[in-house]
Length: 184
Image 1 (cartoon, helix red, strand yellow):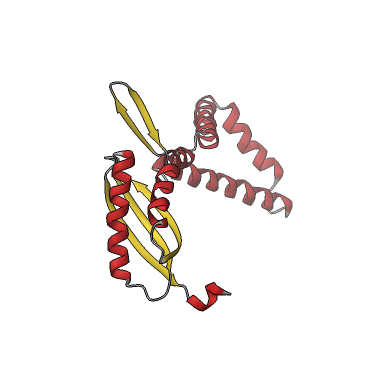
Image 2 (cartoon, rainbow, N blue to C red):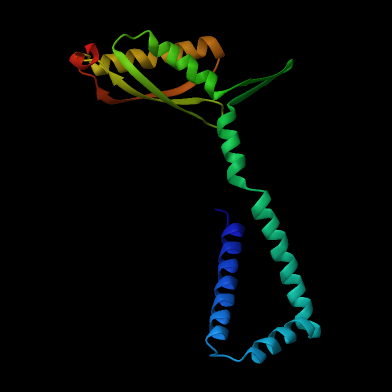
């Protein structure tokens, strides 16, 4: 969260707390209603205090509008799902993360010992890919050899199809599938 958003949240929380406490004190008759009204009247009708109150109110209104309608997290989520934008003298090419995911899954499909594959694709600022595979593999697999073959194949396929550099391919074997269970 950015500083401005955190500050706004703290100030709003403090104001809501203050209003809640004053209302509770009024309900229990621990403070007089006329005292609260005199304080509010002084804030609104005083020459200097009314200008300060108006200025603070305008700032809070603008911050409220910014926080409600201009959410930074939604922009980050859109950027995450879009993919990679490549530009050249002829125009632009957008390669979606879904397309890269399909390239990776097609490369993994050629390995019979991989029973299930899920992927996570990250793109750094230089448009280099970091691919993480979450695999379920069959029995009697030499995991080190499988991982090395997968890494090499995925880097080659993605480079050949999309001309994108794959910085790294991380392989995480999440489970070994028993051959007896898959036959049933």
